[in-house]
Image 1 (cartoon, rainbow, N blue to C red):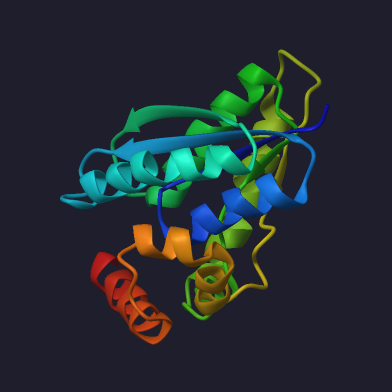
Image 2 (cartoon, rainbow, N blue to C red):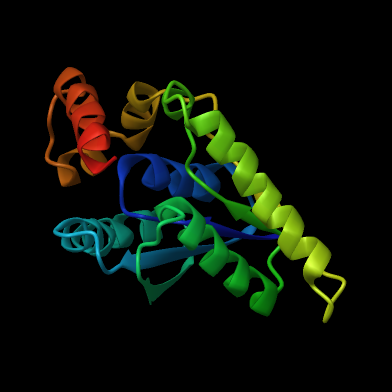
Length: 182
C-alpha cells in the first residue's frame, strides 16, 4: 500500500493538507508533528491545535500520529522539519512526504527558492541513501490553494477549533502572523 507522511504543524495549511489526504486518498496516512523548541509561544499553540484537532480528523479516517522535538534552525523551520520527516520516511519506508505549501506562500519573494531547495533536499537524501534503494517523493498537493481556500476546505467544525474567526479576518491575521514570524 502507498504510504504518505504528512508534516503537520497544527496550522491551517498543514491541517487542510492532512484532511485532503484523509478524504481524497486511499493511501496509508501518517501525520508527524515536530515541536520546534526555540519558537517562543508558537510551540504551545501548535501543540494545542494538534491535540484538539486530531480526534476530529481521526473520525474521517484513522491515521498514525507521531511527534518529535527539534530546535528551530538557521536553515529555517521548514527545512529542519523536512529533514526530520525524511528520517522517519526512510525508517518506515514511506513513499511520499507531503508539505502544506500554498499558492499564497508563493507570493513571498523567498518561497519559490525555498520550495526549490526543499526538492533539492529530498533529491540529496535519495541520492545519498546508501543503505536502501527506497526513494521518497516530496509533494505539495495544496500548492494551488490560497489561504482562503484552505480555510474554506476545513469546514465549520475545524474552523471553530481555530477560533471561529471570519474568513476575511483569518486571512489578514495569517499574513500578519507570517510577517511577524519572519
